[in-house]
Image (cartoon, rainbow, N blue to C red; front, side):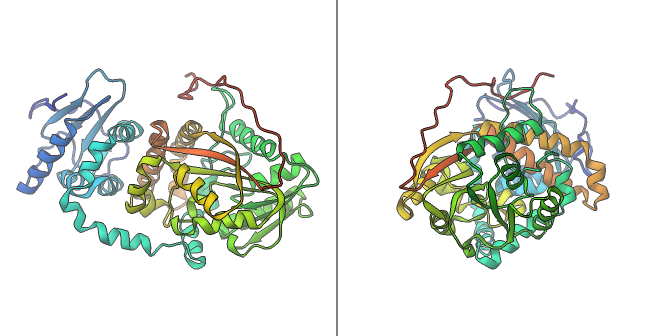
Amino acid sequence: MKAESLGPETKCSTSLTSTASPNALSPTTTMTYSRLTRFARQQTLKLMQQLNGCCLEIDDGNSQWLLGQPDAPLKAHLTLHEPSVWRDIAFGGTLAAAEAYMDGRWSCDDLTALVRIMATNVEQVNQQLDHPLKRFGAPLTRLLHALNRNTRKGARRNISAHYDLGNELFALFLDRDHRMYSSAIYPHANATLEEASTYKLDRICQKLALTPTDHLLEIGTGWGGLALYAAQHYGCNVTTTTISREQYEHARARVAEAGLEDRITLLFQDYRDLEGQFDKLVSIEMIEAVGHHYLPTYLQTLERHLKPDGLALIQAITMRDQRYRFALKEVDFIKKYIFPGGFLPSLTALLSQLTRHTALNLLHQEEIGVHYARTLRDWRERFEDQLEAVRQQGYDERFIRMWRYYLCYCEGGFQERAIGTSQLLLAMPNNRRAPLLGSLEAPLNYELQAPE
C-alpha cells in the first residue's frame, strides 16, 4: 500500500507513552526541518511504502502517515519527538534508531509490534541499513566490536559488563524459584514463569538421563538454578563454573543455604581452563558469549571434558541460516549495548563446526524459540511493574528505555522466528542412550498467549 499522508493539520490521537523524555516535543508541536531532514524523511517514507503484512502509523508533529495495510492485525503507532530521528533512521539504520529511542526522541505504543514489523519486512529494512551514508560509520562500529573479542581477559570484561549490573536488578524480573536467565518452556498456556522455568530444568535433566552416580559439568553457572535443581532432584554431583563475580557470589550463598557444598563444586574459572572428565555436561545459553572466533574452541572443550560415553546438552539462541553471514558483519543494538562480544550461531554453522572439530554426534534437537517470546514477555511485564525499584537501585531513564528496548527487541525477534532457540543433545561415540521420541501433538496453542 502506498504511504498515505493523513494531512499536515491532523494531530496524533494517541497519547505519549511513558518512554518519552520529560523535555520531548509534544506530537502536536510543529517542527522545523532542514533540507537534509526533509530528504531523510522522503527516503525513509519511500522505502516504507513497501511494508507488507502490517500497519505502521507515523506521527512527526507536522503530519501523520499510514504505511502498509490499515486492516492488518499487526499494528504500531510511532511518534517522533524530534526531527533528527528521520536522519537517524535514514542514515544510521536500526542501531541509530535504537539509540534515539534510548534518548527519548521517539516512542511507540507497542514496541514489540514495531520490532515484528521490521522483522517481517527484513529486506526493506536491509535496504535502509545499506544506505551509502551509513557506511561511513560502519567500519568504526565494527572495529569497536572487534575489540570486544572473547579472549580470556576480554570474555571476563564482556560478561561483567552485563551480568555484574547487580543481582538485585535481575531479581526484579526473573523467576523467583530458580532465577533462570534463559528461555523457559511453558507446559501449558496458563503456566507461570516459575512453573515454566522448573519444567525447563526438569526437561534438561531428563534429556541427560541424570542419575545419582553421574558427575555433571555445567559451563555457565548463572545464579545456580540448574546446579541446585540437578543436585536436589536427581542426586548427582555437579561442578559448575562462571566468570561473573556477582553470579558466583550469589550461587555460592544459595549452595551453602541449601546445604549442598558436598555435592556442588562452584568454580570462578574460564571454561577453557577446566580440568577433568565428566559423565554429563550442560551449558545453557552460554554459547552466545563465546564469539564466532572461539566457537571451535568451545565445542572442543565440550568433547574434551566428556567421558567416552558421555552426553552433553547445550541450549543456544540461533540466527536464521540465511542471515548468518550478514549478521557476523553487522553490529546491532544487542552487540553494542547489551552483550558486548556476543554472537548468535546459525544451526547449520554450529553443527558444521561440531562435525569439523569434534567427534560428538547430534542425538536430538528441539526448537523452543516461541517459548522464549513468552519468557521475554513475562520478564518485560515484571520489569515494567518494578520501575520504581529499578530507579531506587540507581538506574536512570535512559537505562530503563535501553532495557525495555532490549526485551521488546528480542521478544519480537522470537515471535517472528528471526531468531530461535535450540536444545541440542550431543553424544560421544560410545554413548548408547535410547532415542527421545516426542509427541507430534503440540501442548500449546502458539503464540503462547495466556487468556486475559
